[in-house]
Length: 196
Image (cartoon, rainbow, N blue to C red; front, side, top):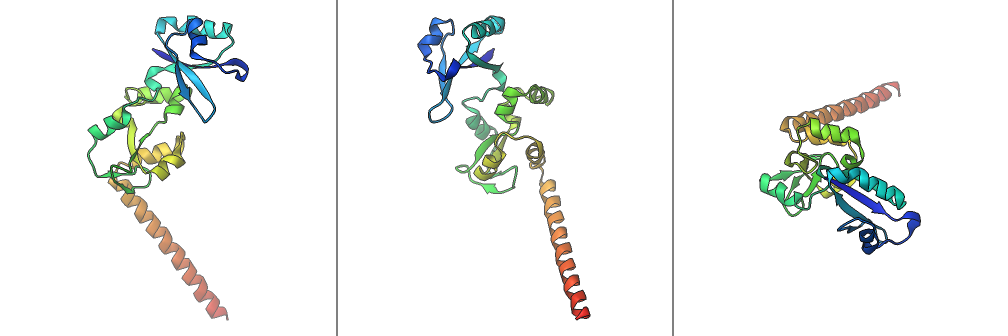
């Protein structure tokens, strides 16, 4: 099963009836901004090539992806059913209440839709799509907003963030760095006092 995102050519306003008359059944309007939207249509595997040809013939801007890489409507409920409190942000280790938890996709939905490399990562990691319970992590609103749809260090931090040892080692390194800075500052002040 594939999901097609359809946009009208030349920024003209398109309606669901227009798509239905052209063979796209049950189009769902998705608002992507204050004044912008697109339509989503589910297509079976055997109709994929036919739908691509139909989009090209109608000069529709389209983008399609496998349904397992789309955001599920119930992912937040599934997360709270699977994990018990207390919750800690995977990215900053801040303690969170259930009301302030933002359930984040460790591998972002947007990246999973668009990148074949990320899709292979999901499959090779043994995840059953982007909404798999292993891909859902607790996050504070600040970290979730900063992460957005990025991977890289955020992905690594999210993977390591589940381990208590990671946070202890990180705190130890910060303390050692701070001690080194204080030592250098004191040494510099002492050296300058000897010169004067």
